Image (tube, rainbow over all chains, first blue to last red; front, side, top):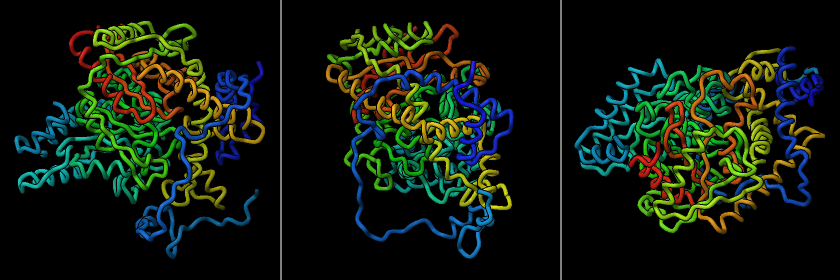
Length: 100
Length: 482
C-alpha cells in the first residue's frame, strides 16, 4: 500500500522545521505520519460546512494593560544563560552566505 | 498523612517543616534510584524553605496555607536559578531567569519544593518513556509505566516523596498518570491557572493542575494556584477559585451524564478495557446511591477528539518549539552559519517523539494541507464545544473512565505512536473544549492496579469536579469499589 506521505514530502517538511533526518528516519516518519493522518481521515472526510473554527477554547478578545513602565528580565541574567554573548547581545555564527 | 494535616501541624508548631521534609527525603533516598521520579532533587532549596517556615512559626508570624508541605514541580515549570529541562537535551542545564507564577504562588503559600519531576520530553507522551533522562517507574509496580506526561509528578506523590505535586495537562497528562498511580489529578478550566512560566507545548490546550493523595488536598492546592495573573493574557480576568467550599456538598439531586461514546456504550471508541468499564459502572452505582441522577448521554463529536487533537496539538507544538534555535538559551551545536547551527542544534537536541510531532504539525500547517487537516480540526473543536454545551443544558457533570486501561508495561506501546496516542481518548475532549476534569481512583483492574474515573464539568465549574470527586472517593474508601 502506498503511503499517504512520500519521502520527498518528509524531506521538505524537515527542511521547513529545521531538522536534519537520516535516511532511516525519513522512512520511519513517512510511515508513521501516514498512519497518524490515516487515523485523522475521520475528520478529513467530515462535512463541516459553514461551522466556525475555534482556535481558542474560551471566548476572549484582546487583553490590554496600562501602558506603564515595569521591570523586565535583567539583561545580564538573560545573557548569562545564552550559548554565546558579546557586548550585551546574543552572538551567533554568520547569517549571510547561507545556502538558502 | 494529608497535606492539610501537615500544614496544620506545622502552623501550630506540633511538627517542624524540617522534620516533615526529612521524612520525605528519607523515602527519596530509599527509592528514587529505582523510580527516577525526579530530574533534580532540590534539597538545598527545600531545606531553606522549610527552615524559613519553622522560623516564621517560632516568631509567631502567620504562615501560608501550605506551610511546610513537601511539593514536587514538573520540570516544565520555570524555577528561577534552578535547572529546568522539560526532560530534553535541548534545555539541559538551563536555569530560567524567572519563576512561573504558579511557582511564586506556591512559595508564598509556604510550600517546600522537593524537586523537579521527570516527564515525557516537552510533555509529549503518555508513559514518561520519552524522557531524555530515562523513564520513571510506577511506584505500585515498577514493571509498569506511571503514565504521562506528568509521570514523575504522579510517581513522586504515589511514593510519598512529596505530599503534593504540580503537573501540566495538554491532552490528559495530569489525569492519566493520576489514574495509573492511584492518586487524584485535576485539569482546571483553561485560563483558571496562569500559564506564565509553563514551557509551552500546545498553548490553547495546556494547563497546570494539582496532584494529591486525596480530593481535599487537591482542592486546597487548586485554590492556591488558580486565579487571574496579568502576566498571562489567556488567564481569566475575574476567576475566584472555591474548590474547597465544594468538598462537602454531596451529589444529592445532581444530574450526572455518562458519555456513552467514551464509556463503552453505543458508538463508543474502541479499546476500553472491560475491567476499567466495570469500575466506571461501580462509580455510577456509587453516585446513584449518594442521590445523584445518573443517565447515559451522547456527545457524538467526542469520538473525533483524538484526530482533532493530534492535528491541533502538534501544529501548536511545531510553532512553539521553533524557539529552540540555539540562539538565546539551551543547547547550541556550532556550525558555520546560523542556519546550519539552528538545524544542527534542533537535530541533536530533540528526541524522536518531539521530532515526530514537530514534523506532523509542520506538515498539517503547510501549504496545501492546512484546510484539509488543521482547518478541519478547528471546526471539530467548535462541534465539540456545541455538543458539550447542549449536554450541559441537562446535566451538571459528565462521567467517563480516565484512561482505557490500567498502567501498561514498559515498551508495550512505545513502538507504534498511534497505540500510544489512543491512551488519551477519554481525556482529550476537555482540553479541546477548555473544560475542567478530575481523575479519582475507583477500584482496581484485573491486574490489581488502580483504575481512574473521570468527572468533567462545564468551563469555570472546577469546584463541581472536586465535589463529585469527593463523593466517589468516599465511596471507594468505604468499599464501594472492587
